Image (cartoon, rainbow, N blue to C red; front, side, top):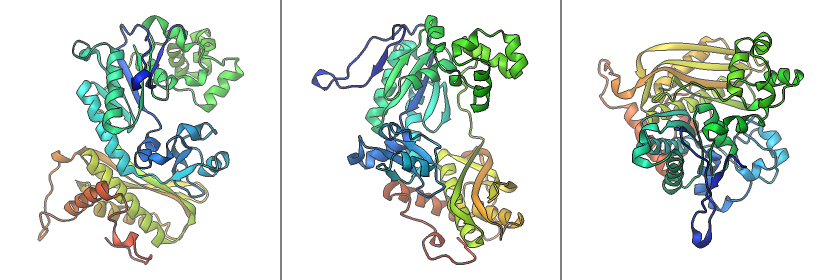
Amino acid sequence: MSRKQVLRSEPGPGGRRARAPLADDTGCPILHVDMDAFYASVELLDRPELKGTPVIIGAAGARGVVLSATYEARGFGVHSAMPMTRARRLCPQAVVIPPDHRKYAEVSKGVMEIFQTITPEVEPIASDEAFLDVGGALRRLGTPAEIGALIRAQVAERHGITCSVGVAGSKFVAKLASRECKPDGLLVIPADGVVEFLHPLPVAALWGVGERTEQALVRLGIRTVGDLAQVPVPTLRREFGAVGAHLAALAWGRDERRVTPHVPDKSIGAEETFSHDVDDPGEIHRELLRLSERVAARLRGGGHVGRTVSVKLRRSDFTTITRSRTLREATDVAKEIYATARELYGAAGLERVRLRLVGVRVENLRPAGSATRQLGLGERETGWREAEKAMDKAARRFGPEAVRPASLVRPPFDGIDL
């Protein structure tokens, strides 16, 4: 690589980290930081004996999907969002670990706190990745590449996992750079090397190029970003509409979007695909309760409350129905979310209809500290919310299965109640 040098954290003589020269990062204040195989890396902290082996994170049922996989498993073709049945065929020797979302949320929060000590210009785009504009931190912390190396070191030291960092002059190029240097790398794309970096890449690397768009481009003989860059913009507009002009700009590395800090979550939700189609209301109620517990924990973990509760109900023929209701007051309490979700399910008229998937989501979010609660007549000042916060503490210390509602522990029965 003549224009780009990847810095990786590989032990050198005496146990030191080997350093390699990096390309000129002048005019490259945008960092994209992406955790490496995040869920899997967090799980390996508790199971170090599995390091270096194929590990898959996901539900083991026939309809489960891969949420994360170690790079050893990826070497067999396993990747995120792949059906678990296919992943097991590709890599039958892999160890499958069910996900623990509370654990991941806690580590994610710690990683984001590291970013905030670097710069307030942080734009999280997932629990395991974010854009940073470090232009205002250069005098205090050094060059963008040095800041990227500092972030990688702090994430490894404090949380025991690795991340990859792309450094560039735009969000689009920085994100591609972090992908190119995975795992555990840092890659600078210099301002005068963007075109050289982009043009050999497959056209599917561009944002906005999904499977159908890629097929359409290939039919036109456009296979690389460089091929696309040579097509006149009017031709692309004629074939793809406004998207064509957008792709033409990206092909030359033009991306004017700024890092937007403190983007609030618009909603928080969870869903589950059953291992077999279910028409038993009791079983569906239990799953709605389980999902409500998960959503409420994520709300409290992120310091949010929300007013609108919605359910997602997918029938066996893949027809999907959603229902929602706005509450009188915002909440982060699983009991209230579940009661509303259960009522919405009942009102949908699907109590004896076979379902393959159910989901619960809370929208219309606001900071928990900004919400006031009007107590009902005879209602105590402390109650379910305090109990659930205590459950959060127990789960962090003893694991997500340490404390659960009795209806998720005892044999099933009709009329689940918290």
